[in-house]
Image (tube, rainbow, N blue to C red; front, side, top):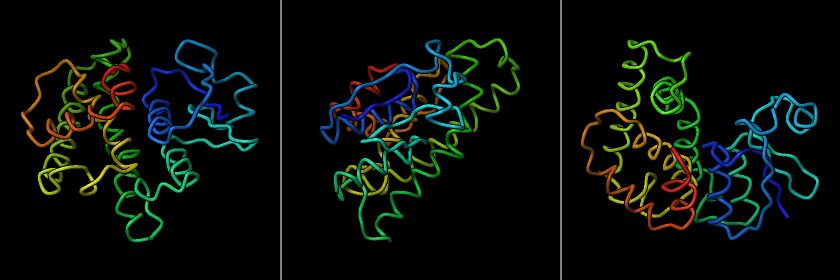
Length: 207
């Protein structure tokens, strides 16, 4: 059975949990981080020298970095609907996954810490406003793309890109600040809510 190391509230852990639901894969989740066992513990560092969650164990092999784990599991199960084998088609999915793990992720970190976690180290008003502006700008990019596809982020059907992008959109909706009205993003969110994995680990899984 797969072992997933990381606390359930982590957005990156939830990417992997949702993927397992999509693939029908049983797993055991083991708490690390988020107020549980510290990721600085030598036992965890032995799993991941970077000291970050999630970590996946599969038949003695160790994987880390959430988007890489999502790719691995889809490939392992030969789910070419989620992650195509053809290089050009696959790249259309992976570009969104890579963007989510870099620019999109970085845009919301400060405002999320400030407003949802109420972290005292993230209370500079100008930085909160700047982070929120950047986050909304990123989601507006998604809105324009979704207006073209009329369905999912990379085209007409659900893919791995929607797992990582969808959870970030859910995080955007969790920020307790005024947000622009983005009809295509709202339609997309409603579409994701039809999926068991998103309802469990996105909509109902915390911010």
